[in-house]
Length: 588
Image (cartoon, rainbow, N blue to C red):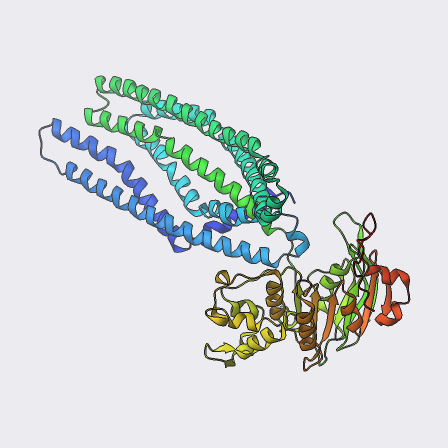
């Protein structure tokens, strides 16, 4: 999705308010500081005239007091700006993270993980400077505007000279914002592509090392680097050009003020002290380096806000408010169709009725749509057509709490989330349901029960701190990771969906797990995506998928009569004869 500038500007305006009172403090301090800076040349000029007149005056003391005010307001502005920026960045990151975690998986998968992390960490921090950047940008023009007014009060000739110089500077800098904004946006997009490829490479580091393709992968990750360099060079060249123009015009403007002011002194229109003040005002007003730096910050802040806003425009999954009636997991799929991003049907008009308490195995060749069927059954994704009902209620009408309390998922490669083993297993549970504790380390009894059902309890109890062991201190095999993910899924009260969730465990452990799941007190419905004959044979029903369509539903022993069904469980043929004496297993 192409980011809409209006969305970025709207987010920028919202970010300004996120700083709260600190933004107000920053604005107040910046205004007081700017006023003090404008008063200082006048006070110094009066002090010079008093000194030349050989008369005592309090203007030197007043100048010292103004300097103290400038230092104090600058310190306060630094504190307020930093604190407000931190608050704004934190709020933007929380908002973006909540949005990303609520995305439909289809939309989330369209953006590389590294790119999303870059937006969350880098661009949110850029956008978080919105309040400080806008406030300082507005106050940065006050010295120039105030200097024009001050010079006008001293001598209109000085004001005209200075105003002409400012107009010249404005003409020279007119293209800075446009060029710098485009360059910064292109730079961040190239940076996001590198981050996305790097995240992919780190995730598959073992595969890359095993394949010996490290050098090729480095080249792939860094392929956008020349583009990044081009945009970075363009950004800094634009900034350097603006700074050079400012540096060239500002001294010439001061010299013009000195010349016109000197002429006015000789004509008696100005005193020496007023000439001194005029030169100071010229230096203050022509010092546009701060303005250029602020504009550069504004460019980065706006570019960051646009990239954050682009992620926030992705549609999130919505939930209803309904709860489930009494029941034990009757599942219905009515005309369910799921399409890939290219429009190709992954599931095509699936009609499936699963009685409550039934164990149904989902089988089929690779690419037949098994995982997609499991995903729509528990609303990990919504179908493009049709409806999925649990105990008569469409899943899209259920509240988030009702859905996640009713349905649980076990994956082939689960991602474990939590600081400790106990937190991993408890993920997604209602805190009230895990309040009862057991054991010396006071672990909720439900967590221990789930671990035993998933046959992971013995492994956990051997760890130094048991269920309180930190996840990063518990090295696990693939099978142990699967079983821990399965224990997490067993909170489901009505529908348990296992997508090859025991593919990495041995036969004895799988048998123990299957017995524990089947013995669940409320006889919840179980949907098991599997490639194993034994698992299909043990199920009450089998749904046989082929090319996105439901080819058959029935008991395993009835479907087994079809040779095409038997072929689903046969390993792919390999060239050449099988080694002599190799046993062939056929489980029916």
